[in-house]
Image 1 (tube, helix red, strand yellow):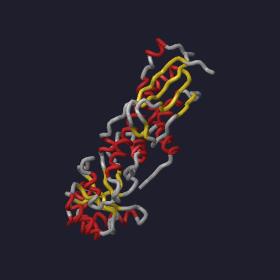
Image 2 (cartoon, rainbow, N blue to C red):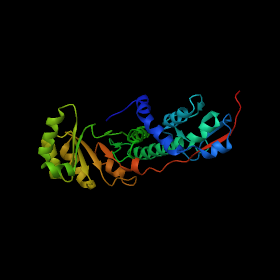
Image 3 (cartoon, one colour):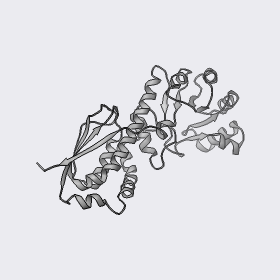
Image 4 (cartoon, one colour):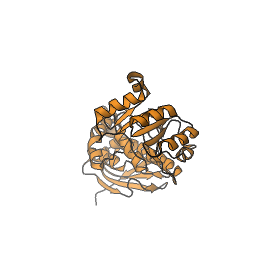
Length: 288
């Protein structure tokens, strides 16, 4: 499972943040230009409107400072913390216009990433007491994969692959073009060497046996019943990592985990997590 540094994440995400700001700014913030003097100073509070797990604060902070490097920021919370409704997350003091321009983009990141972390934490909590780990998939929003997988990690999940170059996963469409599972795994192993893990998707126990015989490192059990998962675990007996995928919800994830699988991948963590509610409340300010 890959991890990445926060500094590396910020550096990789900065062009995306700049593009998001430019997309929103368009021809300029006509409202602020018309109503707010250039030298107007303001103080803003970021307020949680519900209970959730905070994720994405360094991203939101970067959005604000891209527009005003001299902005004064006092953070009251950090990523991974459980925050309560009406809690102040940060206090921002500086020029009013940059605050107003950055507001929506910063909140979009903060609300969506916190939503992902919060949903992930609910899945992680549901499988406590088992060996299963909750993993993200590549079902992320375009351009936001690393940010969204970072949020999964904040919530206690694992990011799994960070892209197509981060391992080999042989799926049904690959098999449709290459032939048998055994042949596909052997070709992948020959191309990848021993340092890159080879994973293969199987739909039944016969395909599981083929994947085991070919030496797959990870076997993805695609949309299998709970009974078939249990039988798969008994057959494999630790010879490969077993990943369950397909149709996993908060309502059934505990039962899936109790089959004995090692990983449970959940696309909903990133493609369907509801955004949390955070507001920015602003007022005039004078430098002290």
